[in-house]
Image (tube, rainbow, N blue to C red; front, side):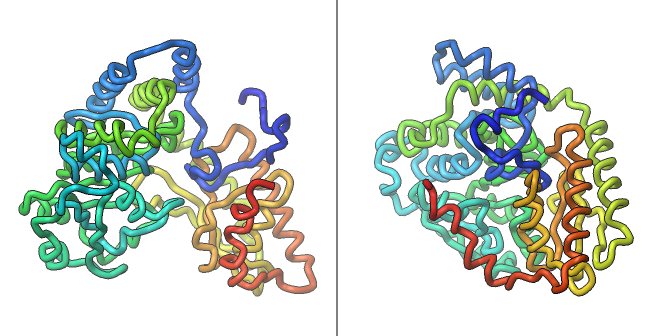
Length: 398
């Protein structure tokens, strides 16, 4: 690991066992991407030409007809939706988010309208789209989608994420079948997915990926798909996309990250991560009130996480209080705790530097031992999670 610059900046030396979270900096950039960024930073380029070069790499790895790089997967949603609304009409591009056509409705399953750091539906509204939610949070059927499509439907958005409801909704293949039967294009948000080809192969017209999560590139998003739809999304850079523009370093960095993905030792990485999971599970097995199991990824990415289930009556601490104690300790350990109210959190091994797995083991033991010595169960009211969730954000800056 290179020199740790965080201390000189006065930043906490966070250890990330939460995953590829934007709030923590997403992922460890692969060496190829770091080198590419350094090489191109001093140089001037024609940005459109650089995007064309990137498009060829994106097309090769995804099976798309075309592609380009944008600021993030979230901006990719807005640009793709905007392109579906305006087509190649440059005047319409300039006028967004005030759409000049009634054909601006964007269909989304209710169970897919989630928050990934910002609301999915906001990314659509930023592009001038009118969100048409179909079904209920836990139930969408064919008739919901079939009856939602009208002459004003511009596109349908499908979200692949651990945040979405993962039962009772339309599968992508069925979603595509119904939409395409009525001439409606399908846009897939696949920000954190390993599968670079499957969604387009299933029939999606545009697929959006993060360039800075599993790929290990600089902060960026990837737009891949049908040539006409990719073009219509790209020209939004002369409209709402101006505020979402991407630098030469991110474009070239993503190109390098994509090419590195082709030669990465994925099996070796999985084996190393499995070793971390086994280490943590062995350390937790037998501790009162703790039950740890290795869980597969919910969207079928080829990775596992350790699910740490906590019975506070025996462990003498709740899942959310243990998560907070780890986060505020020395060094801070950030776990995947978005479902902590259900009395569990996850340990994700994909973003560790060598040796940090042992620090995580030690810190878990320290906090659990401390809780066992407590006279009372450490149980902050669950309502406090909601009450104080945005305190830090609202206090910014100091």
